[in-house]
Amino acid sequence: NAGVMQNPRHLVRRRGQEARLRCSPMKGHSHVYWYRQLPEEGLKFMVYLQKENIIDESGMPKERFSAEFPKEGPSILRIQQVVRGDSAAYFCASSRRHEDNEQFFGPGTRLTVL
Amino acid sequence: GEDVEQSLFLSVREGDSSVINCTYTDSSSTYLYWYKQEPGAGLQLLTYIFSNMDMKQDQRLTVLLNKKDKHLSLRIADTQTGDSAIYFCAERGGSSASKIIFGSGTRLSIRP
Image (cartoon, rainbow over all chains, first blue to last red; front, side, top):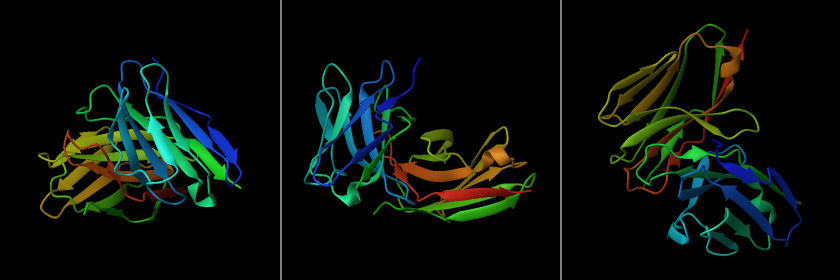
């Protein structure tokens, strides 16, 4: 049973380009959470999605960031017109039910903006 | 607001016990977690405790919760070089809460 998968593991973009980060939850999990970890900091919640729905996006920056979790396929975190301050590790987590104690984390995507 | 605080660094001698401390502000926290992150890797859940518990022990790990003072600690007995990592304290405000709130992490280094 594969864990949470994220790709790419490393992504380099130039300022102004778009970044697309993908997350495949664990089998049987329909709840996905995205977190961002800036250098030397803890993880900060960004958004919680259930299949085809955004449930809580209170941690998402108001501009340039969007997330989706379509009926088929992985969840996508999209960052348009990236800036240097977007450089961070982006982690995805999943759970079978929202009320489960544990969110299982993927290995993360490390985004570097040049 | 919700906040989780922990010290940034801890250095211990191999074979000694490590104690990592954490304080949190959200009195409605229901679940409190300790995660381990090795360099370049994702987060591994080490253990968690419900807010109605005082202590939980799991092999070399002991978690103590003082709910009155909103203080959580993780004790690692017989610390080994493989325990070198960043340890994150985190809390969640109940099963309806979307997010887990993380501290900034304590970097544990082991000296011979």
